[in-house]
Amino acid sequence: MMTINIVCVGNLKEKFSLDEQNEYLKRLSAFCKVNIIELKEQNKYENVEVIKQKEGEEILKNISSCTYLCDIEGKQFSSASFAENIKNVANETSKLTFVIGGSYGVSEEVKNTIKNKISFSKMTFPHNLFRIMLLEQIYRAFTILSGKKYNK
Image 1 (cartoon, rainbow, N blue to C red):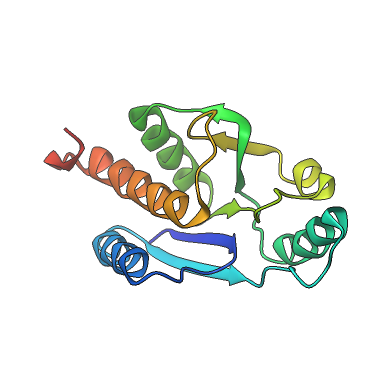
Image 2 (image 1 turned 180 degrees about the vertical axis):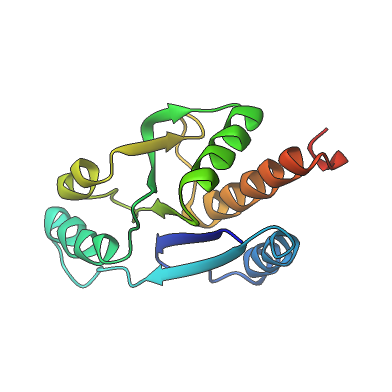
């Protein structure tokens, strides 16, 4: 069974976001194991570059051989092509990691280290909403691959 790690800077504070996350984690448990790895926001520093560098160090400790950085400049996929991509990854490895950076983005080191970049839109989304969107798209991908009707 595939393991998907979602590495994110910050945590979910609102009950409705936690409830949505838990619902998708429950649904995804039929297809894969999902680990949410929440990293501490480095907001004790005033310098944005220091914040990104400190958060980046923690991000890089949690990546796998197949990691996607969620980045506005990344490649955009349709839901079907995203599903196909997950299928192709599953043929090569059992672990897939997605990274959601902090409020200031990620360091250049993170951008240079993680070659695969994915974008859901040119728009900017709040981190809590984007985490739910990512979980939903992962769930949608697995339903597409298994022929379930959810994806319609």
